[in-house]
Image (cartoon, rainbow, N blue to C red; front, side, top):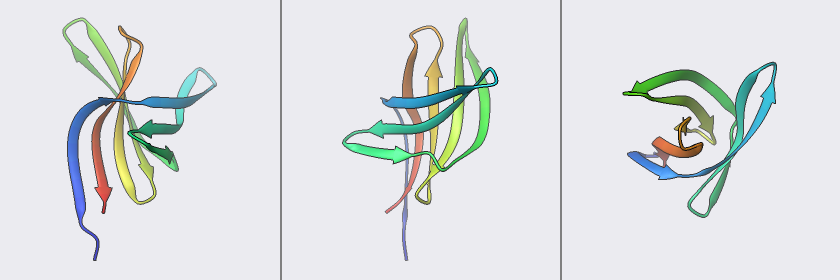
Length: 86
């Protein structure tokens, strides 16, 4: 039986995206020394914090779920949440 490890981090990550029909779609990302291929985008949403706007992408990869966050002011990606099966 597998257990799950849930973390809320905000770790900086590298994200490979595709631009199609005026939409951004994450394809893969690097977290630590590991590369994850995005198998499915489950949900996208926007979040405001004062004058800052963030775009979130809830994605699945290898039975794990991740929330990738794009900061529109800094133009940086971070891993907002991770739920890994270990």
